[in-house]
Amino acid sequence: MKFSFAFSNCFNPSSDIMETNQIIPYATGGKRVQKFSIFSYKELKVATHGFRASNRIGEGGFGSVYKGRLEDGSFVAVKVLLIELESMRGEREFISEIAALSNIRHENLVTLRGYCVDGTKRLLVYDYMENNCLSQTLLGEEENRSKFTWELRREISKGIAKGLSYLHEEVNPHVVHRDIKASNIVLDHNFTPKIADFGLSRLFSKNISHITTRVAGTLGYLSPEYAISGHLTRKSDVYSFGVLLLEIISGCPVIAFDIERGEHFLVKKVIINHI
Image (cartoon, rainbow, N blue to C red; front, side):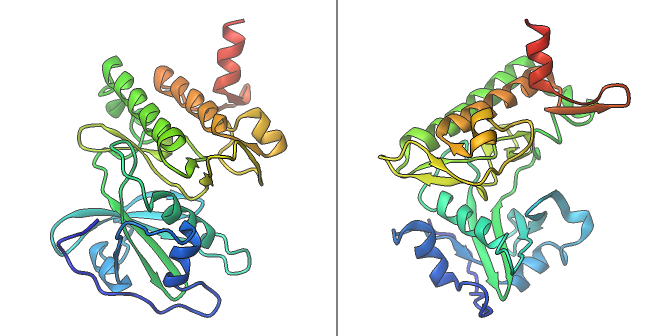
């Protein structure tokens, strides 16, 4: 994958963090990866106006995402990862993201354009998505929600399903995302859905049907067998997708809270109402 604009390397790693030329082989099993662009930290700082708060378009457990504009005029989303040196949290997610997206490309998956490694800093650069994510639009303000006709909800659901099918069936090794949820489905200018945030993803070779791992993901979306035992399969993603479908159809968040009933889950509500 080539880009017409040029970027300078930003290799200034500390002794505590793996260098970029160590990360790529480790992340991909030594396989050749598509040519991501390497950005300098200075370049991304300029693009985001110094990571200004008004440019922040998202925030999560692994860091913040900023809207940026590169020198060639194109808009990007820049994820600044939070790195914890003791636990290596953030570093693992950085590696997982590159590993998962290194050899895949699909209309319904977010495009990773490049990355930056500068000392302990880790940044990922994606195509900018004009219509944010499902949690901010469909599940956000009423003004945004009115755009989501039944036809559009159907097309979004189909697009997510196609992206998941590609990850689970068409690439080798298979990719289990492990965190399918509304905030990880971003929408481009045509409202085409794209699965994003592969920081928790796991790669499965053809002869592996499941692994046992630490439980990670988002409350409300976790499949019961995975949440209880850490038994992870592709079906774990399918369960999360089913919960996401309930959100898309109902327009209700996966977890709601009110003073009278406290915290209640969308899946439980649907089951109770249909028994």
